[in-house]
Length: 175
Image 1: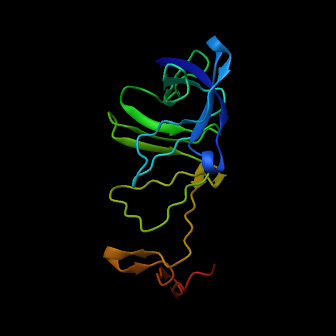
Image 2: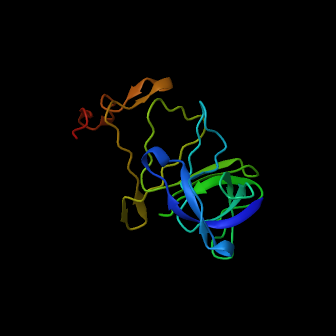
Image 3: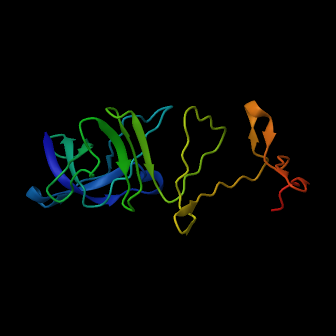
């Protein structure tokens, strides 16, 4: 039978991935029920669910066996502002969001700090738009690199690049 309730407790340790559900209509708290996921074997998907989230459960007639099949939107818990028929993503309670808009072909990552491990290839234009300092109408931008920066197709290295000056070529930049 289909029952609607609210998450009353989230599992930890051996019960991680499970929750207990409170059913208002019978003033009853379930045993540990598995949380919904779209992948649990080799590929795994994990999205945190919060206590008091409204959920739909499929239960046996005695409510001894069952599972949480989905988390439900409500008048209180509404979709994020970026949600549309063409978007898919996740928004965390701190406001961090990662979502893809298929109609715009645009992936948005809105977070305090983005950490990428491994190689990154960017094919296309890159715009750095963090304002570092404003002097009059000039806005300074900053890009920091721990290693040499090279304009590969031109063979220009940032630390070895020299400009002609009236007194000869400029020297190696001083950090």
